[in-house]
Length: 174
Image 1 (cartoon, rainbow, N blue to C red):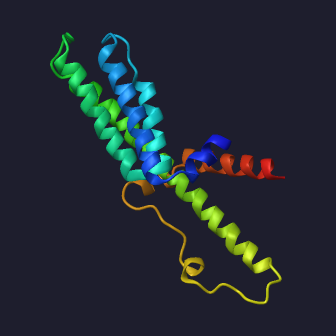
Image 2: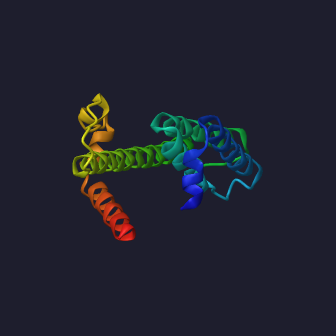
């Protein structure tokens, strides 16, 4: 957990460079290693890193960059498929899975940020300080997900994962 806090404290440029290094390393390994060995699961590391630390846009960019690497590996190599549409199907399936994961992580991150903001506002009400903060940041409405990620924020699975994370977090703080 200390490593995550350390990464959150780093400047954006350091986080972007670390993401780039992770992605380049995994892409290089994927291109160098045998075509029969799939490193799809390893692409989750830079994708989740980008989604958590750099934002959803960077997560989606990582998904597209991963698709470019997979297309290069499939079409540039000597891979033989029994049907011409198989590489397209494989690429689309992998890209959809990574995109859905980034959307879920974005929804969970937004829910966690909303919870933290509500805790900060609640702590401000309970304080015995004579002055209250009236800045617009604390009066704004909670962040809502936009676009098709709102589908995942209402999913029962996402709600279950979010409540499990919140309850786990609250039991650790006690």
